[in-house]
Length: 401
Image (cartoon, rainbow, N blue to C red; front, side):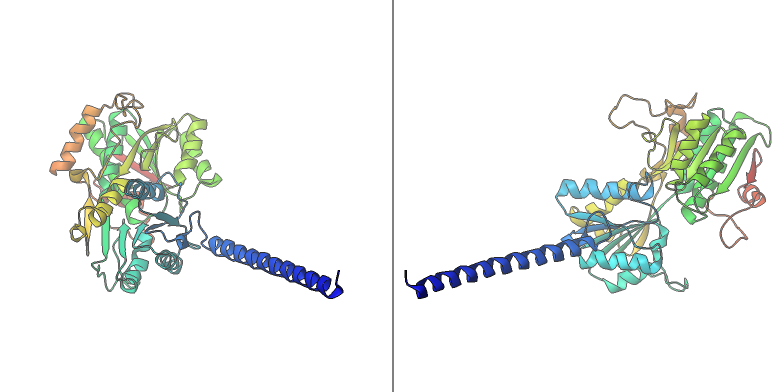
């Protein structure tokens, strides 16, 4: 065979091998770039994939069995049913800058609707509503304002949703005392408006139940405590354990993942728990009921106004309250998966009929729990004296710790 011909064949083969190797190398680089970009989202589902609805989590995780999870379940239920892409983002840090950065990430990823659960988003949404006028924001448990509280303008691309937590807390305290309990506990996360309202309502419900039962003054003992966080940790569990050891029969766990610590302590001590935000009976046998607010339902309702009923104007640029009159708060009355089950079966004597009777009083305004009281401490932590005087407590004696 001609040597020149052989050399040409050899050269062409090497040339093809080089092309193949080059193609493989380029492919590998592209794969690595895609993997890197996907990993930069910092959350379980990347908003860079072009999701239309995004939820930014508040402090805690998406599975906190409380505020984040309740809000997220509403997004998932609606978006899945309607075939709309959706995601959630956990901010790198719980600060105005951290929340706004997460909102930036969501919008850059294609989000047209951003759901933000919690009052900590008030300042970030105030800025975002101007920065992204074509994006709709659903702010739960808060209303936009600037850092100095000098301007509280709510633009037409924002729906501010509030809940009457004092009514839900009232029902929990009322039920506990009507069920025969006289030693109650409250463990709130931090003294933020929603947690304060839950606690204040809880004390007032206990007071009114004691009055109806004709109990002596000071006969209801309540240990009232703020953990200073919304976490599941050993310190919170130890605090709950001590409260049970001191005779507390039931603890209203009002602080996101703090509830997990309380449930753990209750399981060991044989105590009872009142859950918060969502129905937490499925998380522990110790949970006798939960002071809920319609997180999932309200999220779905507002999303429907955007995507189905063309009624965004009903919520745009203002604050809408969900309360007893529109089934926005309450204790669970049904058991998921069993329509014949009794949602009040973990009480000793308190019944659904008694619940419906007191609930009707909230609806018609016969009972109006106080939502706020004057507190000297700038952090919002009320003293026992402030609680008793501000909420007109006579039957209830409060001890803070």
